[in-house]
Image 1: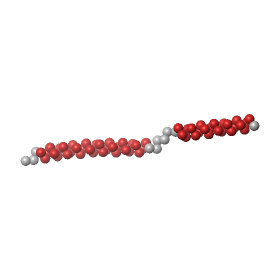
Image 2 (image 1 turned 180 degrees about the vertical axis):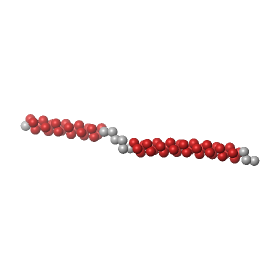
Image 3 (image 1 turned 180 degrees about the horizontal axis):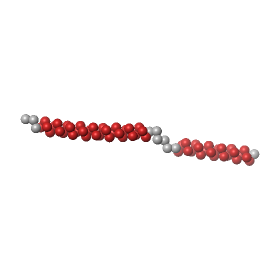
Image 4 (image 1 turned 90 degrees about the horizontal axis):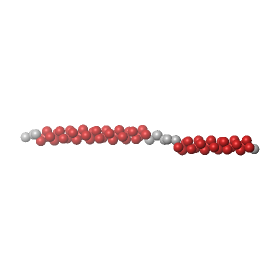
Length: 66
């Protein structure tokens, strides 16, 4: 009877460790999405800077027209 109790206790403790490991495991499934969002924000910022520079150049050249 003691062996059966020891076996059941061991199985129960191992199952608890496995469940804790599953719950505490680091989930990185969203990291690719986050990376894509950051790249998109960077590209939008760069495009905005380029558009502002072209607009400033065109407006300065338009001011030179007589």
